[in-house]
Image 1 (tube, rainbow, N blue to C red):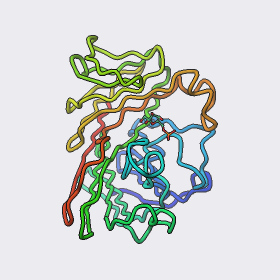
Image 2 (image 1 turned 90 degrees about the horizontal axis):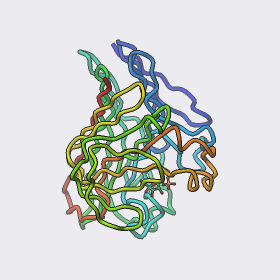
Image 3 (image 1 turned 90 degrees about the vertical axis):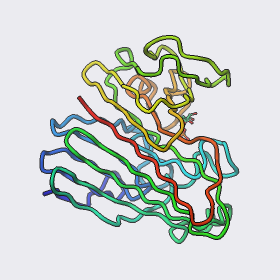
Image 4 (image 1 turned 180 degrees about the horizontal axis):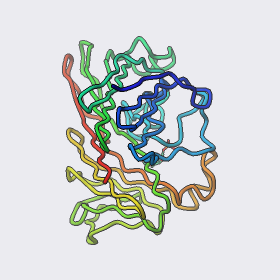
Length: 280
Ligand code: TA6
């Protein structure tokens, strides 16, 4: 049986689920934001900055920010949209037979008036976190509950704790097309991407990639999304970020299943994306 408890994370109310085998996930209601995922061996897989705001005044730096309805500045709203700065509701939880889950929802009724002013669309978001052995799955569904189409972009902006960047690489992207932060479109020649400088790449998604660190291998799969974003700020950008210690860029990378360009979702239609992370 899974055990579900309410906890405080900083000043944020959060839900913690502990599976029968000891695997654990902690999710803040603010953003339905995954703050921690520990596999049954007790190993933390997520990075959260010690300098992050944890009081709902700013997005959380680390874990899994939910990006909706726009990616970065590719839309009329604030960077990365409003889902990561809205307070979601816990709608279901439980577990048996080796599966444990938490489910969260956000609709137009949950939004602050200032957000409704620039996002006049009726919608229903559902995000389900499923623990199963050494695997974590995130199932994200967007339903257009309004009478006209809405513009939709999404990403699960996952910050992995990598121990040390020097020993970190991402494989599975050889021959994939990508756009870098200078907006050059290139093809990756090397079998693995290493992190010797800032990276902010947008790959046309192969369905799975592998994150290799000094002491772990994580296999990441996505279904329904269209890109992988791979981001590490490097030393200069990290220094400029108030909610990150200067050398924190050495401790994480982001690998994000994404659909970065806003595309219309018709009235009554539903979009779903699935992200599965399997630890070795
Ligand atoms: O996903 C990569 C990215 O879009 C980067 O360009 C970088 O800005 C990052 O997200 C973090 O954005 P944030 O708004 O959380 O500082």
